[in-house]
Length: 424
Image (tube, rainbow, N blue to C red; front, side):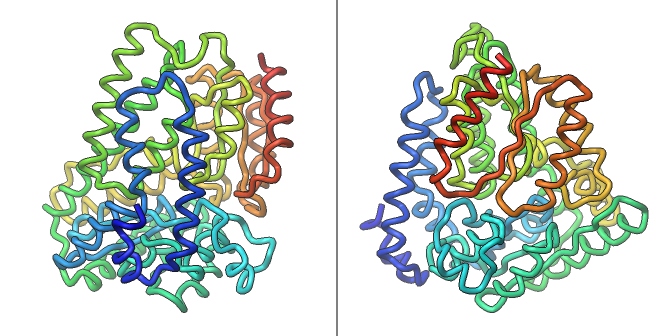
């Protein structure tokens, strides 16, 4: 990839030598975790191709869009309403935040006990390793945790940043705040793009994003079959790629993957033996290339059949009402949908506890692994109540806290193998 895109990366001011090293490590990591699997569906070849061009072809598409006058908006969070960005003919992309790249640079401006995701996105920027960040006209942050909130103040020294205020409760006054934030965000996007968002354009964008959510809902429904027809790693990959791939192309490609998956389910074919323990992941999001824990789980004799996370059902579970005829009605529909997100930033957060138990029962899992990034206080603290709710429902839970490093893989494998043996 390097010889093809070096000129583009140099124009984006990437550190070419360090970036080449990152891509080399990523390629080997991907091969070991994904391409080594047996029984993969043919439709996964599209996602393999996307990863092979993760910093290449998609970045070129973004540069071509910018040359044509479109704006690029980067985000780290599912609270940022992509529908508003698309309605202004801009492009929204997820940003690099799933690897330990730039850790030393990040720790010069952040405390060492900062969560891995925050250190990652700051490190990627300071080390000039993420072409998505360098392509952005605007990075949109949010106040889902104190660590992010303060890190965006530092991030803003290096790139244009806009921060959305996320309510911390779900009372009427909090909904009013969130509606005001939606309107403020709409004004900001119109300012950056120099385009007016019309009801017709916003309705079209809502339908486009809903279509992507529907195809991922279909994928999650099909994966829940007995025997399990696709690995948890492969479904996680589809969810991860949905954050930065072209939404129309992605939806079409995952639709074809689902068609193939439907045939496999109809034929009763599984990717693992039918008696393989079914587990569910719950907790923090997993940005590319954070595949460590799913790999550990699925190489320990279990299979992941669901992810209760922002890179999972929390992002795809709810649709936006599409039939509003006025701007007010469409904004209200967006407010309704995004207020249903059950992030650990909310207090109280009984909705999330109910969703986890309901999901675990629907998927008929043997147990739940609650995943927390090191120093992510909201999810780490909330895991206590998650475990209590699951215990009341008779569902075992293993709580794991880790970062992006590989030093603890053997320790994690020992703990996961013991849990799998217990639930078997």
